Image 1 (spheres, rainbow, N blue to C red):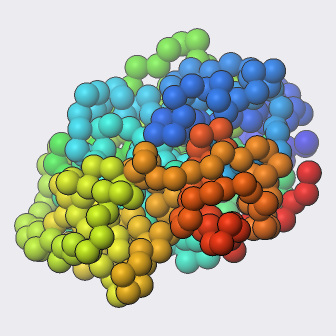
Image 2 (cartoon, rainbow, N blue to C red; image 1 turned 135 degrees about the horizontal axis):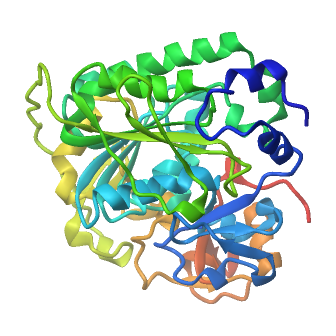
Image 3 (spheres, rainbow, N blue to C red; image 1 turned 180 degrees about the vertical axis):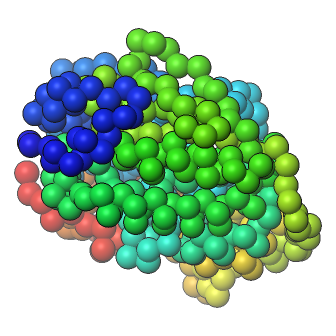
Length: 454
């Protein structure tokens, strides 16, 4: 891979840039890394081929580098949400949260530019957060974000499809706002050669201006004392440190220093105007791709608007016993939309009502299923959820059977019980079948079925 000369010159002044080392790093393939879902996997050996395990990601627990990229499409556990394939540098977010929120709980988080969902699922897995709003402005990208949120199975995630400016109505609402801003993509050249071909100085300027618009819209949403985490996958200072200065110019933020182990290879930088701390990831120094991030704490709020939380959504209690389907039913708000039954954490019932009023929610709680006359028809979201009842009937599939299920093919199973049954692979749910007259009807979502053959 040959890097453009004008690109190399444009980042010559950046802290930590070493021309020859960066060029050499781009002659090698990028690393592959995954992060386990702690709600579904308690031992990495259940998911990882020990022969393909390289080492742990140092700044993120339950995350691992692989020696080579396997066929994730043909791994049932990938579709079950047992792990997420995520670039290791971006997992630094976990270290940042653990440093500043430590043992905190119940915080409300916003992932403003969320698709495809890697950082959303990371936040949702952390005990510091009780509510995670995952937003994507581009409608064509919302589908994959929603799918990944469903597979992750955590009930605290809401998915919205809004312009960043829509969030100005939520003044001081969020304790942690994350903006992984759309950028020129120079940090991902090894993974996306198209990005390298399209890179030019004009694109950097365009992205920097767009990033400022997004940041401006997000400023008011951060609660006083809350945090704004800003990141890009670009090396350009115009998109990175300069935007930290843009935020500092408001007088509403202070920079937060994050301790970094020197063995990690992460480069600490400072913005030119305010000396705001940033963290640079170069593929010649870390086992990961190019990445930048910085954290700011909001010290004061201007023109704050009082948010009067509305009454919670009307609770609905179906005739059937829902504790047969989900655990912890006493802590859940059950509500109905047409014939569909949803569940959400009772502790955030008022917040859900407010967000439902102000945002275009594409995922507004856990879609449990439909109520058709006196029968409950479970949704795939319930099969993916970490709150499904442990007493639900299930059948264990082998690898070949699991792949047939994921292709939505007919399964020949020796199953005696009637009705709705979970199918599992290595004790992790893949979805539903319904046993009728001794035959299993496959209810895997049609638009999610895999087409690849092994």
